[in-house]
Image (cartoon, rainbow, N blue to C red; front, side, top):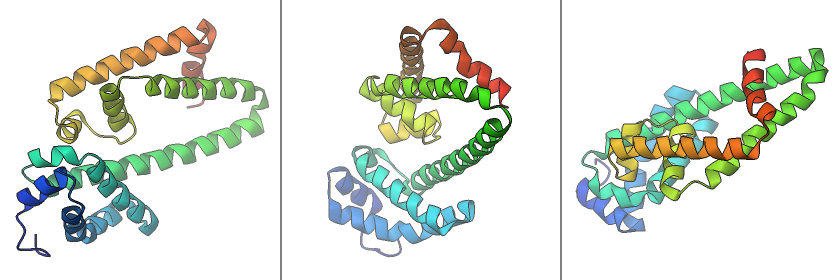
Length: 200
């Protein structure tokens, strides 16, 4: 690393994995400008760039235990940052689309308001189901669905094999599906899917 040439990166990562905050500061100041420039090219937003850089390094610190197993940190860092940026942009696009759809629906189809409330209840039910997942299944589900990470990247971050990650994801989806089916009446279970196709 150019900013701190006396430090071996592998040793630095090992120190961070053990909770060394000073080593983490060195890593942060060595990469945050380069990472910020990369994310800014993707988002074209200084506000989003600052937020994503902070989130990425916070995630690295929170999952520092796996850093000792990483041979090349920079590709690892940029994969996480790219996934976080794309996920953020996709979420913003979805939110903008929902606002337009809901504004149009309320203007043209006011009778659908109750149905949308049911759909919102469905989303909340899924959130409750996710909260009840075993810890490892929950981590895999959230990294894949909220962070937009693929199975290989999740495997690296959690220190698991890709096969194990896929198994956790499969179990998580099954548990969520069973929880939702056991807490909703049959009509309500299908309503969100009907709305999904109706509002497209």
